[in-house]
Length: 462
Image (cartoon, rainbow, N blue to C red; front, side, top):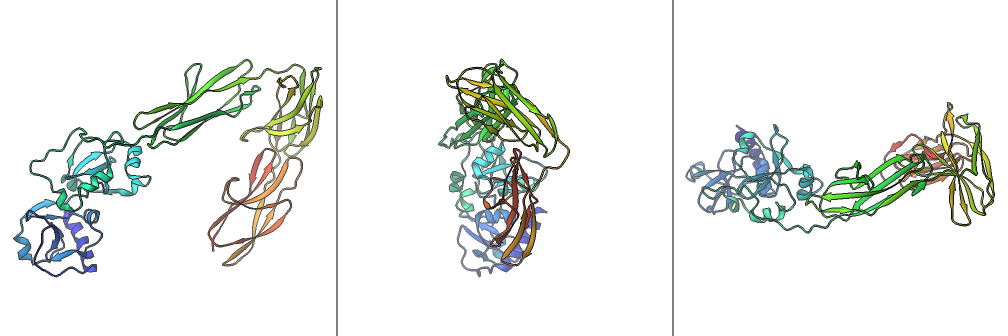
């Protein structure tokens, strides 16, 4: 039933590609009678049918080499069975089963144990090479060992075995190997690891990020993990991802620990990073921090004040802010060598403030943190409006939030993230012209109180 259905497809294509007239037949050629089926005529004088267009196309780009013979001549050639997929050309599966198989010489199938291996053998687009076959057609194949490591299969080697279907005719009484007899050498370059903490010392409550990144590996990764070096407890496993980030709030003083990352690939090769250290800083009793009021309506003004009450010489005196979701600390005040550091500004996001002193003898001192809440009200954001559009350009109006100490410039990007390519920057409301030479995603961003606020995204095209 499956063969008849696919043969009809082959018949339709044979009408598109003119067939060669009947001549003296040569072995290792393609033949057909008046019916739709196309056969491979082998060197041993037998004919093998192509059960589907997919199998045919794994060997030949089109039907132009098919020779038309009489039905009588076709009947005189003994029928010997099916042509199977060219080795290494595709991955196969049945609609009823999620297992994916690689094809070896003589119609031998190997279950590919993981997506990482399928990607290693066939590339990132391996899933586009998967062909569904019926359960009946699958019976034309022989099952062999599972592919469970990168050295158990080679697409290029398999394809070199089968230049024509004649190279792939299964020997009589052939039994496929049930264990990998040929190991394909793979130049395995292990991953190198970079691992760091965003802060080595901070006050209690500050967000600490540990970041591990694997690169330079020639084989797919199987696991990237971050560990506590003191307890050897697993903090986070990121699977086959090349980047792993673990974030935590600094515990109360005294706290100190070290951390490391590990990575492994499909061959079991592993690498371990160096240590990243972190310690919660003690609160300096003579560095006192205050804020007023400790709750404001979003956008309302508040004041912070930091005083150093000791007599040590200082090199710097700064006030920092921490906002949930922000990457890093927000510089709030820089008062140089002054013993008192104070100032006021509008507050748009709930912020935890702390001050930091660097003394002349190399000490780093931290104050206790103070949280000031911003609640109610609306955080300002930029607005984009299309003014005029034709086939070649677009005029847009960009309305920006009013600037103050906590609101930065507004900029326009081609994309949806602040890191996407910038197109323009506006300090006040402005009108911009964008050339429509390609599709664009236009988004405006304004830094407001430690976080980027974004406009709606305009999707435009020529």
